[in-house]
Length: 162
Length: 162
Image 1 (cartoon, rainbow over the protein chains, first blue to last red):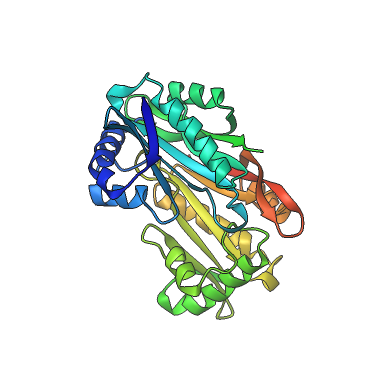
Image 2 (image 1 turned 135 degrees about the horizontal axis):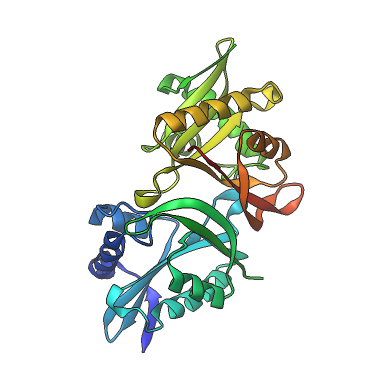
């Protein structure tokens, strides 16, 4: 049973472990792999973010954030980012968080969700987002330096919530 | 004669006047039109930004920022944003700042420049960026709420510097 809920300060250590492991791999996110615990948590719990965790058997196995992608006249479009414990991939945690995110974004009144930076080699994520109704609406040529594959394209993905 | 140079604290008042006038119009940027002077200047002079002003006859007539669009493995792509004093449009100030920006981005070692949020109704800007070699690489459906035209598309524009 997966329980997805708002994160609290008590989740800091578990979130940092996931965050650090994901950014240290360096193949999906454009964060500095050396980012400090303090900076990472400050970012993941920024003022304008909703921060969630996914819990399984009392262990945090994933986390995601949801926020307006822009301010002012762009604030009706949400942005989200997801991280799953690397050794828990393939268990449907990403999908469950994605579905939770769509539902919460609706509840919060967003009209659409946009992912700004989906690395094109992250095939399982792209497959999942397409299954959840997202489309590739932009391609950023060679915008990501993959640690093994060199410069690769990045996709902008978008889904209406109307 | 237009002189484009790095901004200093002495330019704060002039920058704020431009910034405020541009975001109050609300038809090109997704900033809260009520954004405070303090928040605006903190943003325009953020740690990772190069901030420039364009000076004509000792008056600041434009300002722009240049920064990495992402961190880590995405930091080779720059992002920039430009503002011109509203009553000084059509004098080539945007073009001069754009050309200065391309040249400075090269000098700083960026491999490309990306604009994340070009409102599709901002035709003069789109024309200028195309003339300077930018292409539309993505379209965000109805991602901007235009004060007169309602929800309109937004473009992602991109230019290689190699």
